[in-house]
Length: 265
Image 1 (tube, one colour):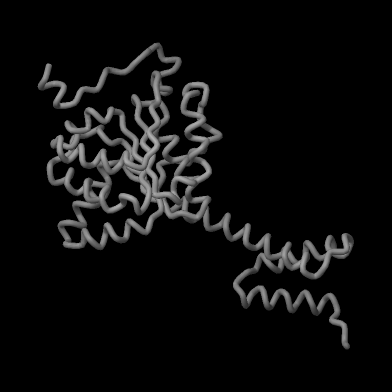
Image 2: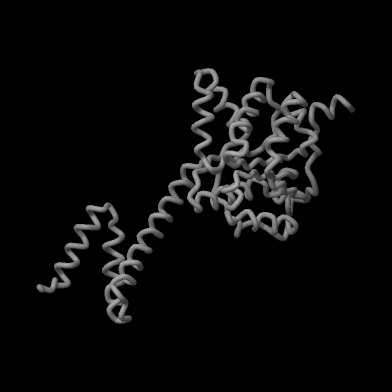
C-alpha cells in the first residue's frame, strides 16, 4: 500500500478544509501533527483534538457576532463589576451566570436607584447568554415601545412578536424613567405576554413594582404585567449611591416620584 508523503497530506488537508469552509482545521492539523507523533496519539485522539479546536473557534466567533448584533450600549462583564458596592447581589448573579435561567425561560429583574449597576449587570448577563449560544437583543424601554409602535402601525405586530420570540433573551433597560401612554403600555404588555414561559426577559428599573402603575398609566395593566414577569423570575435589588457620583461631593440623587405619588402628595 502506497504511503502518502507528508507534503501531499498537507495539500490534501488544505483542500478538504477549504471545501468544508473550515480553514482553521488546516491550521490545527498542521500545528498538532508533530505533537501527536511525539506523544504517540491514536488516529482518533488526533482527529478529536483537531475538530475540538475548530468547534471552539467557531463558538467563539459566533459569540462575538451575537454580542455585536445584540445592540449593547457598551461591553460590560461580570468580572468588571464593583462587587464591593453590591455584595448582597453577588451570589444571585453568580447563579445566573451559568445561563440556566434561559433554558427555563425565567426572567431577571434588576431594581435600584440610578447608578447602582443595573445596566452593567443586565449587559454582562446578556453577553454571557450570547456566549452560551443564545441570540440577544438590548434596548431601553422607550426604544422597545417605539419599535412595537412602528410594527403595530404597519400591521405587522403579530409577526414582530413571533420573530422576537426566537431570541433567547431580550433586555429592557430603564423601565420607569419615562411614563408610557396607554397605547404604548398595551404594546409593552403584549411583548411581555408573548414571551411568558417561552423565552427570557431581563428588565432594569429605578422604581419598585408598587410604582409601576404610574409608569404604565393603568394599575390593572401594570399588575397583569408584573404577574407574568415575576411568576418565573429572579428579582435582584441593588442599593446605595450612584457610582457615577463617587468623589464628587454628592451623596445622593433626588428621589424619583411617580405621577401617582405626586397626586397623593
